Length: 382
Image 1: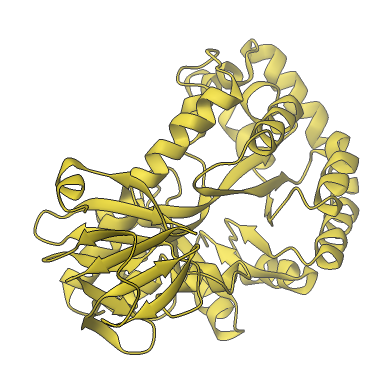
Image 2: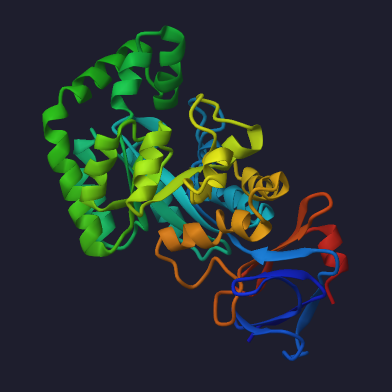
């Protein structure tokens, strides 16, 4: 059994808040809180550091840049996931739901890429708990049976309903904006435009496909989310299908309505770190501080997660426990994970050690194992 002691740190406990206290980790779980744990095994001197719950990211698609660093330049899924895992651990993310878009588009978001990613994830045991967040593109009727089979088989851990087809069609009218999509798909713009128009003609069959996906997810016990909800009506439609996570709502009234009906509102950490949405939508920081947004995700940039929580704590409206819960306890709860997201005896030993003066992550611990450590952290390890 693996044993590890973390001593001298400022620990954020689930029940008692911040405490100067030691932790004992044993065989992957938090076995003891206090100074009476086992003295055997390794020890990390966490003096001057914050000891926080591991970060749970329920929506991240930055891994796409490892799959396709340039338009039309693709790399093997195994290589991409290895580099992605290193980034996740270096940023304190111990559980990651990869937002894999299963679209009608060829290339990066195609059925082929979907299958390659799932196979690569299942081919080996990873240190970070990497899971699959199926971003189901509404008009992708050709892949419907594959998606249903993968949900049923337990290969999918969260389902989100996306509908980017109308927006793509609008952008294809502009050759510069349209090139982003045709290049990503590896097609000429005129060919991609013709494909998009054929796909859009299937609109009549979309609601029934959404119902089938939702029904399958409910039967499998897989949590669901709706993405980029523009209106309260749209949010209610997906809520009735069982989607209890409202991610990236386009208007504040949509977010408020979701919150008021007991649903989780998820937004992006880059929005907090940059001081606003790059699309001009609502401020995630303000919505978190007002109690509307309960979950923050990496969205498209992993380093933003710890920085966003610490920035919110520094603004003074939320304390550290409240701001860190946005990236640990709350997303774990929203995703149905009851064994992580907090520091308490019996939970998974997923932890992040942070130097609050820099701020910088010194070490990331996953399942009681040191998964990432800096030179500063290595000097503290006995």
